[in-house]
Image (tube, rainbow, N blue to C red; front, side, top):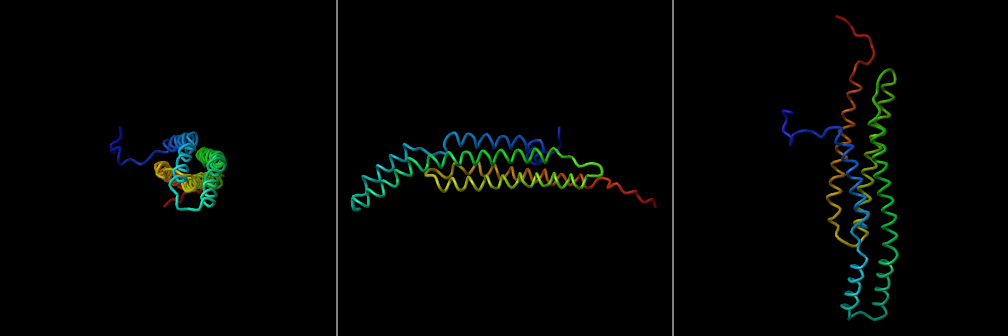
Length: 186
């Protein structure tokens, strides 16, 4: 048992891979549910718009409704498919980079080079996570629907970024070890 209360403990390195995989699962679940996009619900909204707009010219109203239907029937479907692929790739690459970086333990004469390689992979994982967050923001702005459904996932990604940064920071211990130089005796 630890003498530090659980609420004050810093996340452990082993929690980061688990959290990465959890984020990947959440993104997959969100993608399976088409990011909250509901084609039928939007069609009902279009019908209500069509019925309520009596003060607009019939030709202009027909053009607006046709554009809304085109977006609903073709654009949003293709958009969801492409964004699903993109987000899943971003999540995959974030996990790959983290695992590659976290598997490098700098030792011996190549310690500095290995440390740099480790750091490069962890930096790439952080970059992929930032890209993932940005992509979620874009999806939320583009698709019709509740924007708040993305907030918890975005917050989880932010926590994960901090955790990966913590793993990266803890890697500094590899450089503090004996540098291989003979010690001076006094």
